[in-house]
Length: 371
Image (cartoon, rainbow, N blue to C red; front, side, top):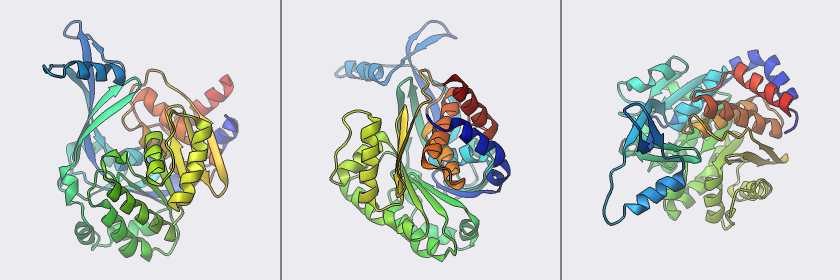
């Protein structure tokens, strides 16, 4: 890694500026249940969890043809959704956040703590629900998303009539729109927002888009989404954030090739190819132990800090996005944007909560001292 000391110094001296930034996030709100699958129960208080997705897959496969029962432990229930998680990451870093999301009417109790950090606007009758099975090498998330089908262009038109969303976007330095995949009408909603809200902005905010793994969507749906994607660039600098699986899927959808295995050098080339194919301003790809970006400035990369036994993985990508978005707001060099992102998510996977600015600074400094 390079410039870690410089990054920590910049964050230290720009606290006041960070606190002045305004961000809008939308639109997914979920109630997340964190789950461990039990491998072996020792007594009422002790059990051995299934450690890896591969092990869990073997247990499932072994049950084919005769069924099986597997105990689970719900370790905690959290407010979730990318708009909420990314907003939490940014708000904890000190940024002013307004979130418009499907958090329920009235707002579900799971979001009370988040509402104390950010300004929360309910844009949904009820939130989605996610069962997040967590393992040392990743997570499996099963989401119930039927309430999200109520999120339509007509619904948006009704909810924006009071002018609140437009007013917040007019003062926003960055607008983050997340979770295209689980909203069946989100492409049409994108177009409605582009035509009726974002086209009215007199400044050029930054846009950060996170699709969430679109593997369950049809090729036709993905093609329509990709056609609508450049519409954001007309009103602001647009960054598309992807994990490595998502990058592989979009590579194949645009006539390219998926990476056969994680590879930081090839991921940089992939980001550059996607940048040209998708007609956005910036592409960011993050994997477990590296992150890369491509923009008009060229490509950038960073590695680590890897955590072998994470406390929590669900929401880690959203905290990566929060750190990256802060780097965008501070207009850091591309490599430092990536470094800020991986250190922000690195703290989250180690402690299970969003990182404060002071924690990020100290983590960067301690890592620089060890290098």
